[in-house]
Length: 272
Length: 272
Image (cartoon, rainbow over all chains, first blue to last red; front, side, top):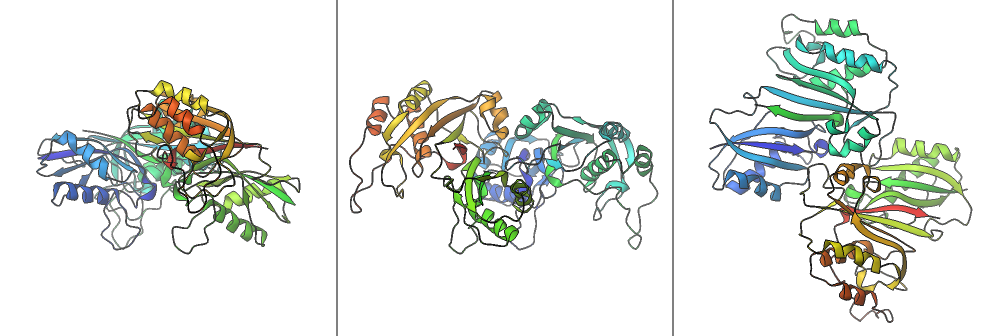
């Protein structure tokens, strides 16, 4: 039987989604925790296919993962049983049977990420894990929404991906890209009060795929633009980059701006 | 010069307020972190007097601590300098000069604690650190408010203190004790959305002093009452306990109910 899990996690204390096969204490991955508990519960080894790899510190409201196993219990009991065993910072929101050809990564039509940043206030003791408290003045704040609109459509994102990205193509299609003040309804619960106070901003982006660090590098470029250190034509030019993939001995494309910190990023939803 | 610090912290990853002088990795106290950074900043050893000792996992919105030192920088710069050095889960909200006879613990007129519990919903990946998601049905919920009202005034709290409490007297005076649905304004920011959804309850208590684990044991007694396992007369009888302190070879007073988990408790404010 093929099963789809929907998973939420606080990424702060994880090395990321992906299982690490290195020895060492700092080795706690979401995939690893889930696979361990599935193995203990089902008495057989389980290999999870995640919809997207999130980095250390990146959160998920609704990550998806699929696996093949003979359950031995009704699928609707699986979420409950797993949550009794899993650490408190990862929760299984749903477990459901899916078609045999379902694959959490390849069957996804669209993934949505949201990046939350706070302007005009330093982090408190309770919220620093869950958003980026941006320390910069952003005199060109209004231009950041225009910049986000430029991202919609199909582009070559080679100027917006991490160095170790291994891809066949830098081309991805974004269905939606918006930047602006975040409404309380669009914020995760732990940031609702910041949204109500008018201090929370959100970069909301949905697309058919995302390259390693792409959303954080796009956010970094928007912030650089907001600071007045980058112009809309420069951003448009970076999006118009193209050409073949660089060969191994060629220099990697240089990101247009530094990546925004992981803690502001949430894998928000995945549509199948 | 005598300085008063006002401090907020997420207690989850601390062994508590008090400096631990034991070797070992799990040794991270709020007092210890503050004293270390004060020593590095001021180039002299600093001993902090805290207003109240909070246990592992207990949070603080406004803990107070005082110390004596020649600062070498304006007091109003101290909070900024400390926050640059401190870990993100402890923040100095204010640093101000106070009279030479000020003592964070002994000068306090009143301390307020708030205990937050969530009814009717399991914890998510992001909120489990910040409240107790109470797993019990509470058919006598309405009686819990009446029970809280019984606590106001001077009582012998020997049935509501932890075993290792070392005290000269079990008598404390509570100025205020209320239990009920929590308004969004009365909740910490990270629980605001739960309050808006009508799922958050608060036990709010202010008094001239609190014995080790007292607020958590009072909360535990309220919950036991809400579950229908304790009556108002039984609670009143426990509050009327009295007599001399037990001698060392005598049995300790038995708590009326188990303590509620640390993660729901916040040291909320201290009045001087």
